[in-house]
Amino acid sequence: MLSVPFLKVILREIFSSGRVERITEPDLVMDDPEKVLAYTRAGREDGVMAPVYLFHAAHVCDLINPGETVVDLACGPATQLGLIARLNPEINFIGVDLSQPMLDKADAYINEQKLLNVKTVKDNIAELAKFEDNSVDAVFSTMALHHLPDQSALKETFSAIKRILKPGGGVYLADFARLKSAKSINYFAYQYADRQPELFTLDYYYSLNAAFSLRDFNEAKKQLPTHVNFYKLFLLPFMVAFKSNPRRQCIPDSLMNTLRNIENQLPGHHKVDIKDLKETFRLGGLKTDLLQ
Image 1: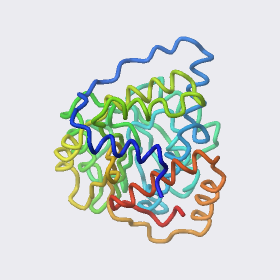
Image 2: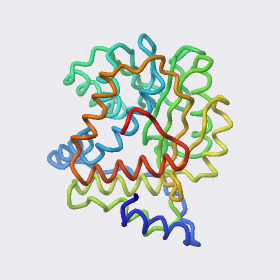
Image 3: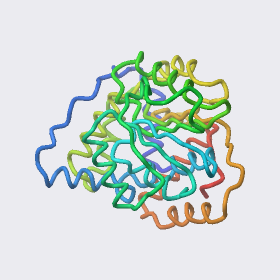
Image 4: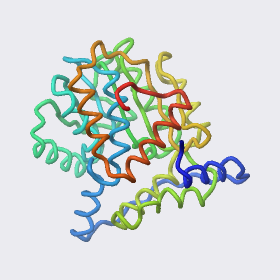
């Protein structure tokens, strides 16, 4: 059963006749060290994004096998990448980002977590020039595609993924899709404003406004391998996912138990969030056996 606030947003989006235009993200000014620290802390895997990181981690784990090479596009400070790499120490991961300051944060976090199976590379995800054709086993990207400047860059990114991926390789790409109502955007952006730094709330607000439309995603999908499916949240498609069929040859009990323990230890409000996320994506066709 979905939460009441979530149901209200669904009804608003269904009956809304307006359409919010895409606004590319402005640069956030982060010149206060304390605010930057709070912003970074809130974005870590036990912060306000915890249920989202867990959800995506489980879906990525469906697609990867020991000994493979897996690429995270626009890895940012490596929060999502760090979680997935820690869950899969026998897999080699490469985090890609165009921002050197962001890669510096990622490298620091990787060292802090003592992750020996992760390295980072500076590259444009719309080109992936440092990767040879058919050279990686799986590619994932979580909540980062909206940073791209326009639909052409989105198509180029999907084309680059197809180029570097081995035949039948794993794909998991998840991001926001643009909501119809500005009120709905405000709801999600400010939902936990009392529990997170102002900069984090503002960044979330800008991200939702910068999201691509469902039409943009449908057009870009033509550039991906044909075995990749397109999913969206049921009734409220403000989040979408592209996922190939599960290809994990064997799911260790230890992996499943760890994921479920993380889920069980989430605070109450985060359990509501991941429940809503799982249920609305499940109704849209996307599910994994790795979560309860």
